[in-house]
Length: 138
Image (cartoon, rainbow, N blue to C red; front, side, top):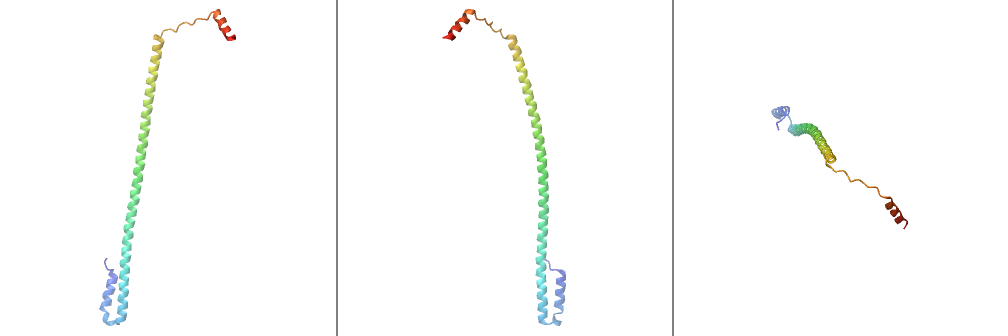
């Protein structure tokens, strides 16, 4: 990471005045500048990480919104397909029912025209009724 320009300027001034400052004070000042430099580097790294995380979150949100939009479009397409299929199936069912009704109508017409008349039913004679009544008593 680059050195903070203000810290670099202060360090240069301190170094130029080194002869005018007592040794102990000079070391304390330079150690403080070193600490500030390290803290500044840590802050810059943390800021860079936060910027990266922010970009990633923005991208994730964008991807999520796009995914939702795609899913909505897919659901609308699927719904339209289902409606289309239902209409097609209804047409097929109606057509088959009409065909079946037509066949049934044709069969019943042919049956009525071609079928022989049923045999005449004869009424039983009175003897037969009596006989049957005797059988019941026994």
